[in-house]
Length: 205
Image 1 (cartoon, rainbow, N blue to C red):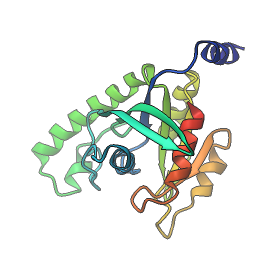
Image 2: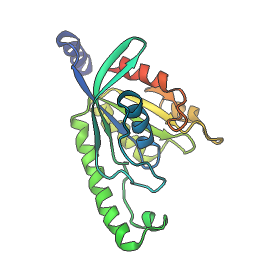
Image 3: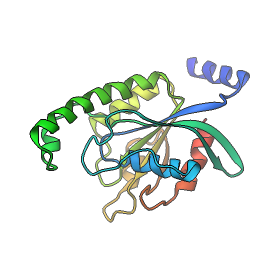
Image 4: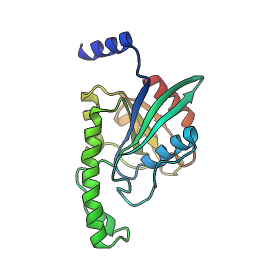
């Protein structure tokens, strides 16, 4: 009943001129690659540095006034690339990627702060893309926690099965695990099926 009332009020008072779109998910699912793809297409500029090292994005990165277009429709949005959500950040993850221990511990602290910052942004975002790595098991504690928090706040959600260009990708496993949510599959790296994602973003807001 409360959700219906919120939607009714939104319809009565109109949509925002500019929405905040958050890109959430665990580390290394391709969130920054996706953010860069969207930002580059509609602003000509990328947002951040993508890397195989976990928690490369350790602060919320923002690109303002991104005018996303699809099928003759347009929205203006602030695009927010969130740090990867983890239940625990271990500095050894960085050491395993060739980073010295001192630097790894600094990055670990920064990444932990980034997770807290990303969670705080849940009170400010208007819609969320939850990005999954299509080669991994989607039914994890982190993914369930992210989706539970978003649903509790009645935030529009699009599940994005990324990395579908990889041979062992199984995007259908994500849809099967969470069939109640809006869903699309893409390869942000290879620019595959992005038009469908843009259409879903506009429809959701």
